[in-house]
Image (tube, rainbow, N blue to C red):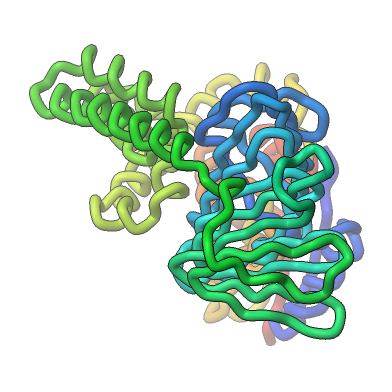
Length: 396
């Protein structure tokens, strides 16, 4: 565990941020969206490794086999279905972009969200439902890229121009600049069978989820857990599952499990969580969990300090006011600004400010002792942090 001393003047927030950026190189802010695998069948791989239901992916290259199909739910609510025999790269820099290398996909966006599908020498931007399918030499139809747009519009961009389509089908021949608008939807884009199968699967999920919710209402937690776990297995993207499992964990006084599940629900459905007052529950749970964790760490100090620190972890302690006592409130304010900047650094785990303060209080270090090297080292080891940011300031 190493110590980073910082001694900022209250007016030098920018200088502090710049100093930390220099001390921690590679602080680029990742823009890629996280994709959650909600359903799959057959052979599906991400960056060469087999994909599993419930897995989260970021900036990955996805390949489906001849029998492979994968449904992804993006962080913004967009649903992407990659068809059999396809390859696509999720955007690593642009949050709503992917590159379709071969095969086909279905994309259903959230209203007012514009996605861009990049293809060789062309691209498609859409804010609706888009179906794309490449037809190569082995295809029964004329070769080219086939597409259909519904419930929105698609902007087909190519060298020298663009075309705007609404609720139309099209064929984009290889080597052609402008796409050809089709009067009739081609058979290549007819996925009625897949949609029927998906509808049946959704009905099964809805019925199983209903059984779990009714069992929870009636106090039959065993049946509720069985039903909810079944839903999680066949439809990992169903957001109500972690909510009800979290409530059951609360009833069983398993606060750690309840906290993790309700945090997951809040991430996946923030509006639903707000409507159910989940943030208030999380605040109480987090506080209770932190107090228990801190008390345990201090009670087992020898064991804790002997264990290795968490990789990439850093703790920021409240600064020590060595000047006018009227500026004491700035001690935590400076730390909060540094925490906000450090939290943007990929791969860096910034410890919660509340946890840091609780450890300081529990270990009876006191604010005035934080600038002392031995106290800073002790608190860092208790927090299992690789680095600790401490400092002082003075306003005269």
